[in-house]
Length: 215
Image (cartoon, rainbow, N blue to C red; front, side, top):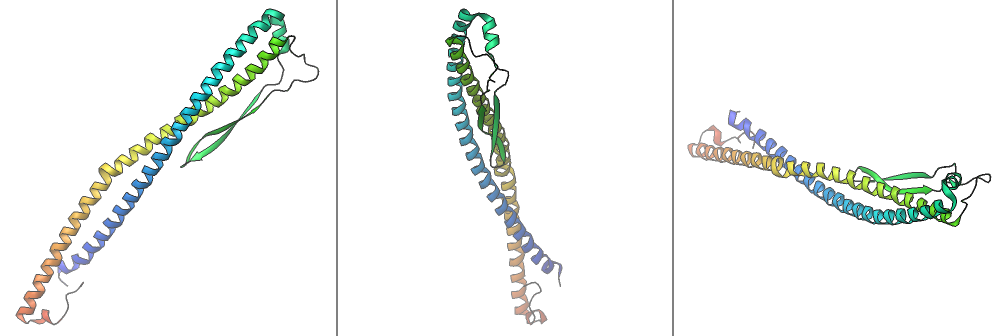
């Protein structure tokens, strides 16, 4: 078997590997584009939700501070200290995942419960202030969760965009060039083999009676 006949199957095998690698890279780029779109859409939703939560938080906080000033003016700072329950509110963050990215998806809020032996607010203003501060704290927790989700999604979007750019601008063109070179080399080899066979047939020699190895 001649050296050129041995290179033909290897060239075909190499071309097949390049085609498979190129197809895998293209599929990977398509998946990354889809992931990037989903991440950016969810990030925009999280930022809009954070904006809404921020408006609510600022409004509730201003309302709470107004009631607090009235309550302290009516009952003094001692009344404020005595009205604070011992138990604290509890915030539970529920986590979700999008395309492998874990991020805060929802916030659970549990108000503090005042025990029977604890004092209640001594005036209506302090009672309103307590309610308003709880609402403001709940809004602050939701704001923080939406902001954290947006930042996590944005960070993953940056990494995804970088990987996509590497595929589209470097890896896929490189594979395309290598495949084109392999196909050209294989085409030249097959052409030379065809010329040699025709020459052998014209000479009527032994090469005309047996097939060329690798064909």
